[in-house]
Length: 374
Image (tube, rainbow, N blue to C red; front, side, top):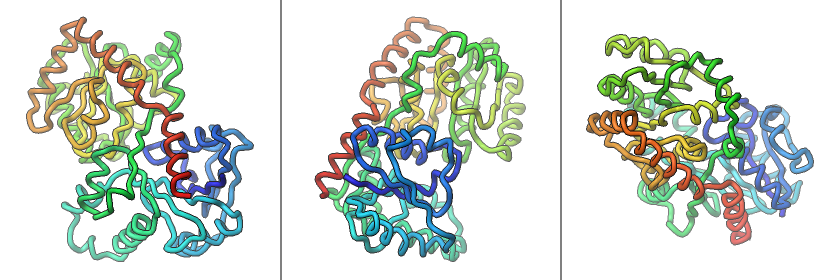
């Protein structure tokens, strides 16, 4: 089977969200003897390609052209030239109106329609850039012969807000990258602790710091819990968001216990989870919440918001809390640090739940979608 991927986002070195999904899926699909073609309008970053077997893919880079021309004309022509069986776009948008082969879209969520559109000023809604973006997304999800999404919650949102027929959608879970499954030796944990100057036990969060992620809620809960000799460590975010969170920490009297690491090396993240007392995910909206899988696979206790897909993905692998009642998270943090048996119970729950998520399973289920469509 020949499968072409819209791989243009792999030109960026970042491994957030969609790129993690794409790289992990490509890696496992290659082991199923699927011939992979990676299509882009700019060179793909070597860090992503290094994770794939060298003989498992062929790259096709288009000459310079406007994006809309690349998506709507070059992509289908290249599919025809390579005689591919399936064109798969793993990034919510990026499929042509017409194609010589069936098209599959991975639609991770409908966050723009459900969450961001509510607060977007009217003049931005009618801007040329916003209209173009909406058009790209509409074409992708309506012209795709089938849609893969990553949680039952996302599937229900797609049906409700986009009026996509239920029979056109398949739910396939994501998983933590293979590097998280490797045993972390003590010397590696100590190296990461030393690198980021983490002397005390700590509560951990990694991800974006935008409003939707609800980081001030976590900082306030940590301050109210008043934990002795425990830090709050936040990784991710952007430099311009640092000062706002730092000022909040100062106003709550926890500036010395709030560690804002900013963006961290991907290789350090497994050890940061493994050394943490727990991982807290207070997000208001997620399509899947990959960090839950990453924390659970290394046995890090997890507390997640009772919001959107997070309870579905977490299952019995941790505890949930309301984002409307801060005392629930405060009490969980206090219990975790004061009850060793509760901590050990959460470690075991996390490890057991992590076994439900595996990229090999994800790839095989994706291959089944290909076969059924063909």
